[in-house]
Image (cartoon, rainbow, N blue to C red; front, side, top):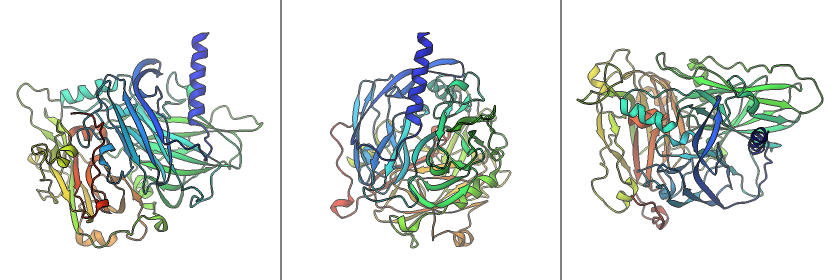
Amino acid sequence: MKMWLDKKIIFLQIICCFSLIDISYQRQNEYNFVVKEANYTRLCSTKPILTVNGKFPGPIIRAYYGETVYVNVHNKGKYNITLHWHGVAQPRNPWSDGPEYITQCPIKPGGKFRQKLKFSIEEGTLWWHAHSDWLRATVHGPIFIYPRKNTSYPFQKPDAEVTVILGEWWKSEIMDIQEEFLRTGGGPNISDALTINGQPGDLYPCSKSETFKLNVDPGKTYLLRIINAAMNVVLFFSVSKHNLTVVAADASYTKPLTRDYICIAPGQTVDALLHANQEPNNYYMAARVYSSSPVLTFVNSTTTARLHYSGNYTPTSSPSLPKLPYYNDTRAAYNYFGSIKGLPKRYPYKVPTNITTHIVTTISLNTFPCSEGQICEGPNRTRSAASMNNVSFQTPSSSILQAYYNHVNGVYDRGFPSLPPFIFNFTAEYLPLDLEIPKRGTDVKVIKYGSTVEVVFQGTRLLQGIDHPMHLHGTSFYFVGQGLGNFDKHKDRKTYNLVDPPFINTVLVPINGWAAIRYRASNPGVWFLHCHLERHLSWGMETVFIVKNGKGHHEKVLPPPPDMPPC
């Protein structure tokens, strides 16, 4: 009896935490995050997971536009940890950005670090997550940034806001998954379930009683704050018989876009309005994988949550599932992304047209030859790898930011190329095997302060083509173009949207295609650029952009805080 009551109390706590939240909130400028293990039961079995404050997903951080908040991180777990505030630009403050050995050394067990979150241009939904090893699988949570006091949204104020965090769940411990595939050189085991707010939903075993349930009142409007916290999968998401009106992406407002589904990549966030305008009943909200690769295995199942209308009525015995696009519907995915338009009146600055720094980088899956004594479970007895511009990034054992700031040599090289070192038909069906082998290096790109930058991400068909969600720390950027095949600078630049592109921080590069972004490099510091598919990050699909100090006092990196974790 006591066990049943405990479970019910936990379930009610989850409902209270993730159900309806009034748009107004009591200001809080200081948060305490205790990283610790807690037991959670999913899919008929219980295991310890790493959490913040015992919560999965973790607590919400709330702020108004332009505010600064502090997070006191105490590591009471058994692993080294860092936390990243995904999409927060952190002007002049890379010290609190979080990626392990890029801007800081990890917080060791028993250690602590007071991190400063400087909100500047962000307004909408972002999220925070662990940025060390694969710990972000369970160490993550939302960030809500509200309009300035006495200002409003560029759309009618919703009646309530709702957190919708999409994720993955493994029955095994996540660190065992990571250690095994890195040891063998093969791919990681796929997850056992997709989740909505930490729950697999009605279609999975031992899950129905704790499926997330959203209670709505007829006629009201709800702001869904949707986050893809999944480790390795792009997702389609929809609500049965309801449209979603997208009003923001990556904490930047967009022109309203009404669709019956969205596509969302790992790292991305979407703010969408849901109008409770259907017949009172129960309806499913659901998510499933979008996977463009014909050979890649993935969790081929659907996670669900319930939308429940209040009132006196007899609901149908089983809610209907929404009609999601088929798992390999590339047209549906990129039709959605190509339809998102920014809101120019809310831009922080105009879309750059006079570009001073051009970068074209390939993003490739690769292999390394098998050396004596190694286990090699990659393709054709190799070890799996990934690269940008043929450089498979090797993470150093000390912080690149601290080395840069203190003028320490030997930690990184300034040799990341601005163009692919080998020019070939990047998306040809058959490519020479010797092109699959990248070089290893800790190569960074140094950019002059104030530069206007264009980066073209060119997907390749080395090993296999796949979509890549590319995330840049320290700034958002204008997503100005995309296409299939090889990028042609003479032809494709003419197709750019320089009028109303979305201003985002994570862009999904199409399979065997390209995506172009533009931004102004006005945030000095050391900023990570990487694929947000965790297995690709582990294999080396990343680099670092160092934006040099400007001449003015307010154009220089701030001094480090006194409690930086030691290396």
